[in-house]
Amino acid sequence: MRVKRVNIGIKSVKEILKNTAETMKRLERGERLKPVKEPEIYFTSFEAFRKAMTPKRLELLHIIKAKKPSSINELARVAKRDIKNIAEDVKYLEQIGLVEKKATDHKTKPVIDYDKIALEIAV
Image 1 (cartoon, helix red, strand yellow):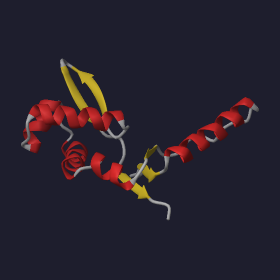
Image 2 (cartoon, one colour):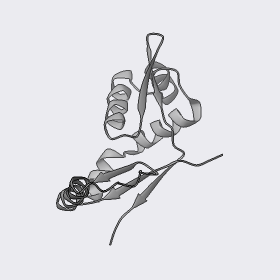
Image 3 (cartoon, one colour):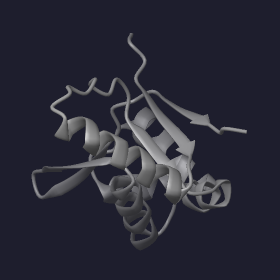
Image 4 (spheres, helix red, strand yellow):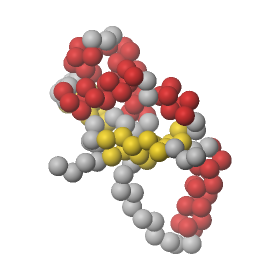
């Protein structure tokens, strides 16, 4: 089984803007960019990462991957949490790129297509 990873890193806004500007310059020159092998998500600080990746959200990622719930309601039942809180957490995880939502038969199914999250912090 091929393992798909999501790389999470810590970068300052200044560093992200600098990298974006460099990429835009390369595109303007007509250079081809290498395709991204694995998705990358960046936070501005370790504290921002900790606020985003709470133990409950990490648990949701595990439940989605292991149990493959068919809906947000089923995910709430398996996690034994309030549906409103689950929906908010799934929405946030979707916004940062860690969860996809697929519409199926009047339901919204949370989906994860990776096996590992790798956290990299430059020192």
